[in-house]
Image (cartoon, rainbow, N blue to C red):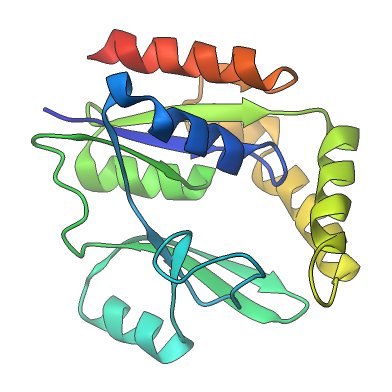
Length: 195
């Protein structure tokens, strides 16, 4: 039986970088799952690589057809953005191990869909001041920076990932991303130990 490893944490904790490093480790044999979103594509992103970028009508169609495994909606200053995982054949938990990025809510929905024995949490943490600085630097690189959204997301994460929610989701282990190499090595060791 394969596993579904769910990498999660507040914004700007380094999830994308950790994800890329883990995927590059051939000995872990992790497969990716490309999620879907209705948010606008960012500079440097490619449709089908980071996400499948779809419109709201496509999101609604997939929901009507019961193809959505898990979903999250963010009420942003630019309108509602939906992030979701689709039962589109990407995941076969009977044979392979998968890694993808989600939230606590997404993790819980995946665990409910596939079962607790299949879905494994990888929760990353970074100090708040460091996260805010990283978010501002990332936004600065956009063609039209939206600092209101950076602030909204930072404050929303404080609620979405509060201690009560982490505990309720059953997250017992945390990976502190102060030193990227150490963080990745620890996660890789834990994944290898599950095989």
